[in-house]
Image 1 (cartoon, rainbow, N blue to C red):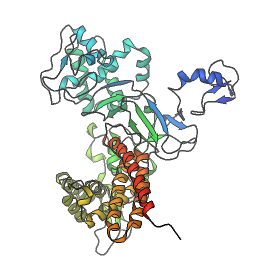
Image 2 (image 1 turned 60 degrees about the vertical axis):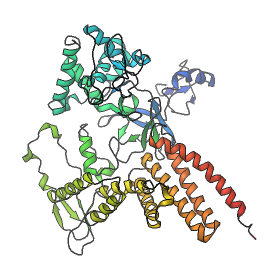
Image 3 (image 1 turned 30 degrees about the vertical axis):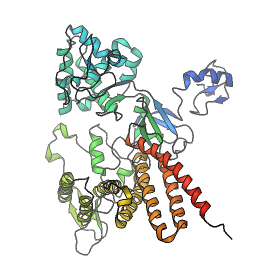
Length: 547
């Protein structure tokens, strides 16, 4: 706290010299008052503070140096609920429900997985309004999307207006983009399937206005995070995490705890005063796909990566020049062009898509955007029907498309990533049953994609950590094979290298919950490290002492 430029104690308001070492934002006159305040402050203490900007709105700024791997933010959700399109799930814990294996809430009729879930706080809103309508609900079909669940998460937001003013105020402080959403297909569908359903089914037409319902729809859609701890995923809306700005080359990544809390973790070192960012879309998509996806949230991205057509020299969206004997690649002058929202039904004549051209960086040949888009569409169709679980099909795709795309193109990277992770999994013996050339290919692909990710999306630790786990196994297996002819010294060198890579993998994946595949890899990495340390000790003991 500060008063006219002077720092004051958060407890007694006296002049204060000490400050919280975590967030650097709260001050204290004594260590005793700092300890006293910690029980309250620990839930808000982060190495970042909220700031406001005319253009950006609210954003978060680092208050101290943050190291890669540090947790920047951890918070519980304001609201949780089922996804808008979902089969029947338990409204207490979101587990998928099966016919004949449900417990019906005796008050309202909504099915849950257990009696405890029928009494959970999460279930109170829909239970309350179902009771008020005077008739219990009956869910008869399971295993397929059910329309009655579309309104649940929005209804839970609305419930807070009359039951928790503090929570309601926090929700209303989040962005909803109501004015931008009006008139879109999504808006009209939500009005029919959510607003009208709430009015008619729950008999709440005189309780909540269209503006209130549609604003809550927008709040959930714009700020909701899909929580992947269960299948199907459920939705959670958070408070402070909603203030973290987007960047396609973000400095942070998000994950979740087993309890559903969100964790924002630094993927790189962050200097004091820097903006805290995360990627709202998939960083492995090409620039056009990322920007179109973000446009659905009414956001035009102009980050450093989107502004650089070469994407930091990786040529991630580049197409091979078709001129004979030319080894150059085609890219447009810029990807930063206004994206009209597809559901607004814009006049095609106003879009001027044909004015965009792609230019070769070598021979300067010019190709229309229509030709490039047709090529990418054709390759996309080929990719959509290709069996990704078939390593041979992946290799054929890479070989075929290398005549049209840059080796680092997002289509090539997508298939290469699948192939790198697949080699060894298609054999009962694991990597031990893989031919030498396939083992070499796996090693090369893992290194190539891991390096690419470090450049393009250094905070995408989930994919990179998984790749490094695959790489450590491939290098260890290579060492085992070479040791059969070259001796234990070669094996020791490979195992030592493999351990170093595995250590980095474990570091990158350490915040992943055990419910996710990456969390399972993190657990396995710890086990493997123990075994490798023992192997290194045993190998070292068998080698002759240096003269």
